[in-house]
Every structure is written in structure tokens, then in C-alpha cells.
Length: 342
Image 1: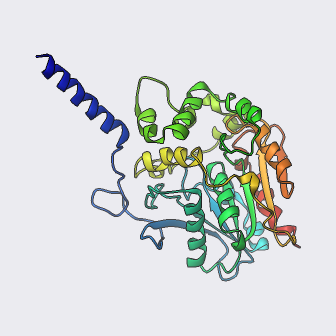
Image 2 (image 1 turned 90 degrees about the vertical axis):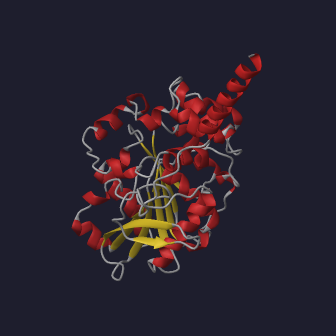
Image 3 (image 1 turned 30 degrees about the vertical axis):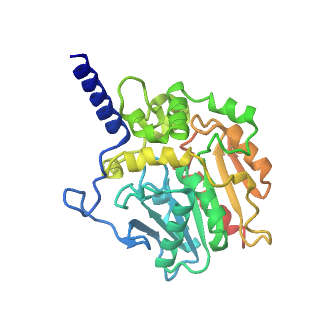
């Protein structure tokens, strides 16, 4: 009898372990039972599809071409306040901006082997497909801002300029002094500290941690008010998001959970070891951050700006994480790397 009970317990444990470490497969767009395809897409070299959206003047008449990288729990439709730029500003600049769904989000195929390098190469392929020429601008917000570090590392020869907007930091980047990164890490809510510990030290448990009901998981992923500044909450109260159902329609694992594992995992390079990609001032790199950001501690961005003096650092007083949704600031961020060449 004891043998049967033990066997049953072991079987139950094995089932639990399997379920905890094997998330349900994604519902890939265009496949039976998956969401429909509504966006233009390109086919990448490895066979995956990448969905994108074009904004501004035509590619043929554009003076400046920008690829924009969306943040956490977002998609190609989420472009800060770009949609609120006046027609006069867009036409005067000759601005053509392309946003795309990062792998797994919206209508882009998931990429289970995604890395900081792979997403940079996806961006390069997208630019080539759209015939952007030898050089183009990149701009990213939040988790998309973190992606820009990969562009600076892996495709610097293709960049005319780069803008990092409230970029997410990895607390385990070795370039940070241990006391500084530890202090910043503990500014997070305890449940977010645990979420990132799991993503970094035990990524195979990321799905389980974010789907179990015994302990509170990521407050950031849940959009808890505690992770936003006062200004953030005011901005969010005025923003209507009609695209949220489409954002993670293929599943949470290859979107939110994959972001956590890649963003806070073990990187192949340290951004603080990067060299200036524009030694002859043929382009520039800008980093914008709010001094009241509750999600990404400003102390770490200040340190990065000190370590990399070739970065043009802009700190927005009284702002949290969502300041790019203020139209005037969004316009200033877009203009900064473009007009300094004039």
C-alpha cells in the first residue's frame, strides 16, 4: 500500500514539474485556431514573420527613417505620442517611422531562442526589407529601450542615431557597482524582486512563478498602481488602449515571460563596455529618463551616463516612466538626434 501511495505522489510531483516548466504553446497568427493576420509582415531569414506599421510621410520622400521599438506588454500600435505629432511637424521633418511587433507580440511570430542579438538582427532585416538604406535611426521605450543596447552592440555600422527612452536595466550587468545595483534593486516591490530573481537565476520557472496563485507575482506585469508615479497615473487616466486584447493574443509566455527572461537574464555583453559608435560625430546616442521613475531607478541611468560620456543624457524633472506620452516631450525626443545635424 505504501509503495502505491509513494508512486502516486511521485507521479503527481512529476506531473506538477512538467506543467510548471512547460507552458502552453503559443497561438501563432495565421495557423488553425490562431488569431488572424491583419498587418503587413516580412518573412525573416529563419522563417519567422515580423509584423510592422508605417507612420509619417512616404518612404520615398522621407529625409529621416526611424525604427521604433515598443515596450513591455505593448505592440506596433503603441508608439508613445507619435500619432499626436502635427502633420506640419511630420512633413517639415520628412519623418517616416516604422513600428513593429517584437517577437511573440501582436502578429509577429514568437522566437523561443530570442536574445539581445537576435532582436537587433531582426531590426536590421526589417530596415533592409523596407529599403531604408545603409543607415537609419532606432528609438525604443522601456523594454524596447533596452533593445537599443543590442543595436549599439551588434549593428552600430547601420545606425544614423539611437535614442533610449526610460530603458529597462538589468541589475546583473557587471559594470554596475554592487552597492549601487543592490540598492536600486531593493527599491522595487518585494514581489517584483522575486519575479526578477526567478527570471535571472531560474528562468525555467518563469512561467510557473507568473501563473501560480500562492505568492504575488510581478506587480509591473499586473499594472499595479504602486509601480507608477503620480504623473504616470495622471497620464494613464487620459490614455485609452483599444489594442490590449491583440497585444498578447498569442499567449503570455512568449511575450511577458520571454521579456523577463531575456531582459534580466545573463547577457553576452555589458552595455557599459560599449564604445562610441559615432567617433566622428556623424550621429549621436540619446538617453531620456524621468527622475521619479518607480520602475527603473534613475540612479542606474545616471551611472550609465557617467560611464559612457558620449551618451547625451536628458533627465526629465518630476516625470516617472510614462513621460513619452506627453506630446511635447515626445516631439523633442524625436527631433533631438535629427536636427542636431543641421
